Image 1 (tube, rainbow, N blue to C red):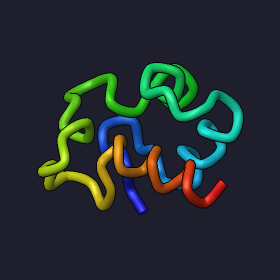
Image 2 (image 1 turned 180 degrees about the vertical axis):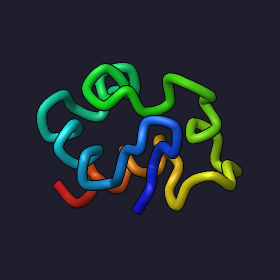
Image 3 (image 1 turned 30 degrees about the vertical axis):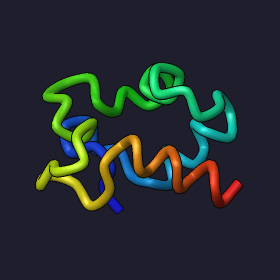
Image 4 (image 1 turned 45 degrees about the vertical axis):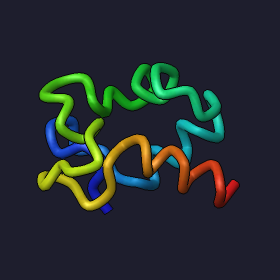
Length: 64
């Protein structure tokens, strides 16, 4: 499940970043570089990704 097209970040990488750095957006971006290029994946209506970054962080936190 693609979370950031520009940096080719998948949901599994977000899960690992949340486990390591917590659910802070900036910390996850630092770990994965997701959302640091075009920033489309930071928006809920981004059509380039399967799951926008903020939603992916929330889902990863819920899955623990």
